[in-house]
Image (cartoon, rainbow, N blue to C red; front, side, top):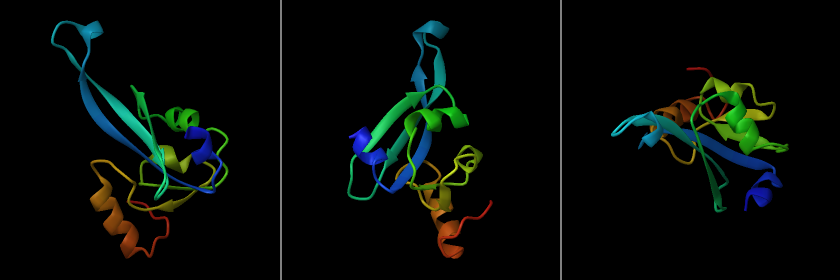
Length: 112
């Protein structure tokens, strides 16, 4: 599934914060991690659990992808060489607000 997505010319990407119980941090402790995903309309979705939102997390998930990357306005995506679209990602807590901004801009990349 992952190789098939990376072999295409279009991807959607997003990251969503998720709190989880962390036994390494102590009994009952909660840590925040991020569920990163890549997909395309009508295609599979690949999820990857990471402890950060840094740019390198996307690089690891979408390494060797050469097409158009559709994502929200988070700055980690701006460092991606093929990030040309900013619109509603396939999932995530901020997709509605971002989607409205992208529609208002005619689908062109914009800053918040």
